[in-house]
Amino acid sequence: MYVLHYSPSTASLVIHWMLIELDQPHELRRVDLAANEHKTAAYLALNPSGVVPTLVIDGAPVCEAAAIALHLADVHAEANLAPPVGTLARARYYQWMFFMANTLQPAYRAWFYPDEPAGAAHAAHAKAQARARIEAAWQQVEAQLAHGGPYLLGEQLTAVDFMTTMLMRWSRNMPTPAHTHPRLGAYAQRMKARPAFREVYRREGLTDWT
Ligand SMILES: N[C@@H](CCC(=O)N[C@@H](CS)C(=O)NCC(=O)O)C(=O)O
Image (cartoon, rainbow, N blue to C red):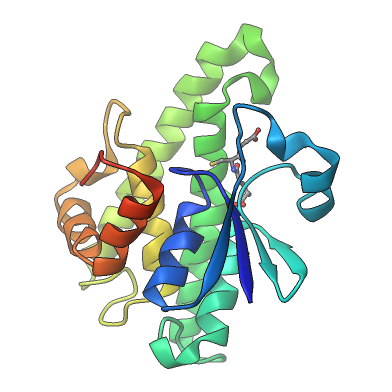
C-alpha cells in the first residue's frame, strides 16, 4: 500500500501523477507547508530533509522525487515506463533523470528559495544565476527533443517524461518559460493531454498551465 505525503503543486506532483497513471491505489496525506508541518518531528522521522514528497511503501518511507519515480517505473514494469536494465536506452534514462534531479531541481531550488545559496543579502544575485542555469538547461532539453521524440528518450514514454513535465511547469511564471521553446511546447501539450495529468490537476485543485 502506498501513502503519499504531498503538497499541491510541488515536487510531489510527479509521484501523485505517476500513481494515477499506473492506476495504483494510494492514500494521500497533505503536508501543510505554510504551517511548517514538514518540519515537525513526526514528518522529519519520515523525511529528514523536511521536504515533500515522501512515499511510504508498505510502512517504509522513501524520499527524493526522482528516486521514487524510478522505483515506481521498475516495480510496475507492465506500464513500460523504464527501458530494460543494462541497455543503452537505460543509460540515457538515468542520464536524463539525473540531469533533472542534479541540474534542474537545484537551480529551481535556488530560484524559489533564493536566500539559501548565500543568504538574503545575495538573493537577487542567486536568483539571476539560477535563472541562467534553468534557461541553459531547458535549451539542452530542447536540443535533445530535436533528436527525435515524441518523448525525451524517443519513442518510449518513460518516468523521465513525468519528471520533465513537472519541472517545465515550474518555469511557467518565469521570464522565459520552458514551454516557449517550440519542441518543448509541443512536448508539454502531449504530456498534458494524458488523462492522468488532468486527473492529478483535478485532485490537487490546480488550474494554471493547462
Ligand atoms: N530533492 C527533493 C526536493 C524536494 C523539495 O525541494 N520540495 C519542496 C517543494 S517543491 C519542499 O518541500 N519545500 C519546503 C521546504 O523546503 O521548506 C526531492 O526531489 O524530493
